[in-house]
Image 1: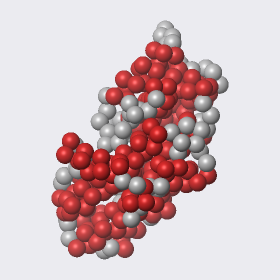
Image 2: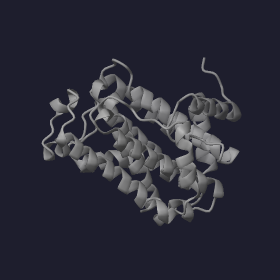
Image 3: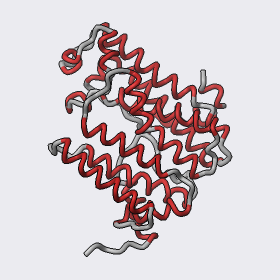
Image 4: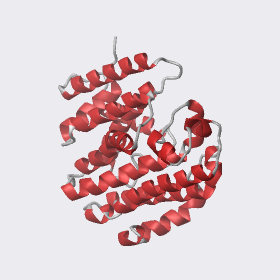
Length: 291
């Protein structure tokens, strides 16, 4: 018999779930109001569980896709008021109390289904389409939670979230490539005369360095194009959260760039030593971060 979860118990479960995972960028940060933190934690717990389904060890893609399809059905039932389990009990409450579009949660599941298939990306268009489903919905959900989802803000948020996704991809090469998860578009490798075999063999030649220069610039450009977003949101707490997130993303790009060839063997992370640089970025005006 399934346990019945109260709304408060369900939110507590999601907040604990969010705290279990290390992330470079804040999740349900204490900079955010308590009521907002729990909504973000519910969304995070929903997405985290789906991400785990997409990456279920040795399970074949077909089984992972079935799990994701069942998760989508549970989402649709929760939206109709038929929630089950802590994640969907919390998420149903968030859907009732806020104006977040259900379609954005569905977009996340589309991205996780892509992850489960693990087919990589043919070109930049496919890569950016993935970002549109995997990263862009997160920023849009946050803006909807704050009733600050103007067209201009949504556009800036899309740039930031895409930049963060790309920065994360290039940061994770040393982890993803051994797992046969290839995030660099095939057309990009071909354009630089770099092959999948080179990547899997850990070859860092001039072609690799030129390719990484382009890829890191792609991430940095998006982050800087969206750097004006904090000054357009009304909440001071959200403004600080956004500035910290953008600063963290730019910091990851910078650390990845400095690693050079070692990015194929070492994953850069943000630690205590990075805090001074991030604090400096927090107090800098937005236009300075756009340079």
